[in-house]
Image 1 (cartoon, helix red, strand yellow):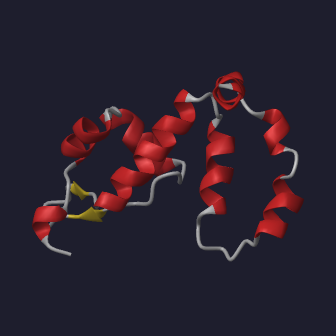
Image 2 (cartoon, helix red, strand yellow):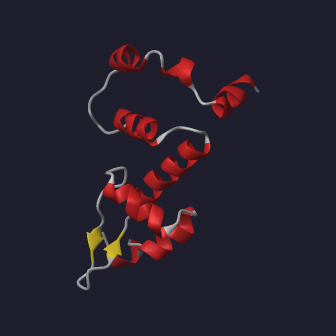
Length: 107
């Protein structure tokens, strides 16, 4: 990974429209992986951090709680979950969508 593809926390905040404080909070609670650090101790984020942060922001905008977002991220976390396991563990989740998701599915 070259240094030109790394983002400071300010650049990540601007790119994703998520405040610096919220980015730090998501790191503290484990929704966003800890970033690399520069020699001076500054956080350096990758494009993967930006993608994950955008997913979290969109999910929150749809009304998902942070607990829900964590579960959604866990589904794509490379844990080897099969469709059958997802249905077994999260089979009722489709009945518990936030109202915004229900409206989007109806249109």
